Length: 301
Image (cartoon, rainbow, N blue to C red; front, top):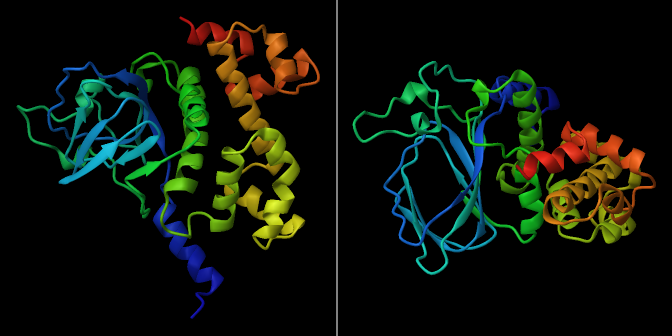
């Protein structure tokens, strides 16, 4: 029996009315060959990408073998332990966040978010999770693309709450863009995202930009969507038009070149198909919150 639209909307709004994800801190973490990680409990939720190396995650009594491209979700309060490979130690990209605001006036450092051996776990300090069902461990193919998402909000290690409001806003905006991409991939319940758009996003994220631009409407037609319906659903699910989404991906690739190559800003603009350095700088600043030159300086500190 089909649920009436108004009933679905009431149910959706009830479950997600206080849905307000907030990035707490993010970092790159490199394990040493002999490093030992004890069993941990965290008050925040975490999304972690295995950038390099391999190892094992013991999560809530289950063992998961990890390799480059493994994308892990750990809900607040779940016991877990990392065991890195001695020959190929893991390198993590980590984002710790709340699904909704939690008042923790006594939390000032990252270590405060992890239960200590000398104190009990306080359930009231943990961020509750909305009505989402997420895959705990997945595998992504385009590691470089996902690294670019993490790069946009990975800041010098500190709690965002103790940084300036402008910096916190900048990093959290980039994190929420990342979280959208993550949820379209990881959410199990169809109410969160139209499965056809999720398939299209996966195709776009794993194809060369030129191919994505030329075949986008062919892919949409193959999934049973006409041009106008496709535009409507895509904007509804992502908050962006298809062109804006592809442009955002292009900017993420340019951001990687700013920190990983010696190309000039002008050369990077031309490489990624921007008609002028002025247009590139304006588009980059709008998406990232800072100019290309500032982004390069910030990442190379």
